Image 1 (spheres, rainbow, N blue to C red):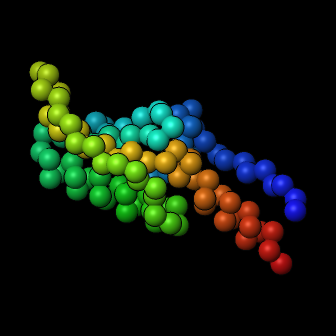
Image 2 (image 1 turned 30 degrees about the horizontal axis):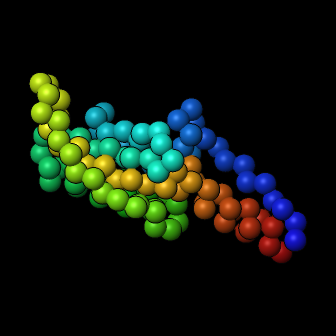
Length: 111
């Protein structure tokens, strides 16, 4: 058995450079082992719809379901802040594109 090194193309935040981007300026990928992908809006259905749309795009890009271990709903009642925060707690390896890169390497290694 030979050990193969997996080389990932990551940006400064540690996620894959070709991970589908968040469409709204108030959404963000945060930096923890299971990274919260945060969707903020004053309208809860809109935040949920953006979360679902991004999750569909990310799963299409990854080629498999994204490992989401939790969905957290919070609010921010400070002045001038979007009220709702919908957070998808996602596996950082999925956000880095590791499963996609491994499949591509296996496909190239196959005769």
